[in-house]
Length: 317
Image (cartoon, rainbow, N blue to C red; front, side, top):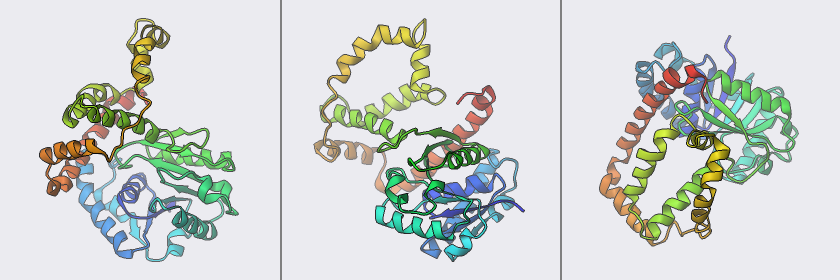
């Protein structure tokens, strides 16, 4: 019998996790406080599996086999019975998180890890008073987790080393790339990096230096062309003849002149937003957002296939 995983919450993240676990042979119990939401998630999974199969992203499994491993469960107790891992995906509301983790800690087998997909709440904020707090951890994915491999593993100070190891091993068994956040920090790693970039994007538009469309082009057609297969440190390591130290010696002064002008953060909801929103709605009317999200995910399928076929074989992460 396959090991069972409980996926708690069936929104975008929960649905993606269900696929990620099921295609790797795990039985998935999908639970939501609204039973109809879990059933709708099953329908979504059924709609996306053919595209994943066509791209050979089901690990050689059939559509029927993957879909059959995902079961919508009405009672939380039944979802948690005998599981080896819990992946929680509830809204980012601290009181809700505390209440839910109290229930999870009571009902989940004592040797199972309880992981949260939270992208903003520190694990210490909602696990401190739990008897089983040592087995609680954040495993924050990038949306959608069945197509983007990064997962941030964020322990509280009391999370056991065994919990971290088990979570990292599970994520690697799914083909994910777990990165360890060594100490708690607001935003973890990925969103702090994203925040810095977004802040500069808003600052450039707010200052009248560029349109939203041209900022998007700088990332999409410039930086992202390299970042799809290497990170910023490897990028600069390869952009100077003698590597990263050579790059810093050559260019730190130039970059410092820029960063010295970045201390003031613009108001993201200020006047710049009017122009940004106008640019976006001219490029994509609001009623087409859903179709564009489908387009995005189909392109992410191609990226995931490219990473598997071209990059992972070279042992690049």
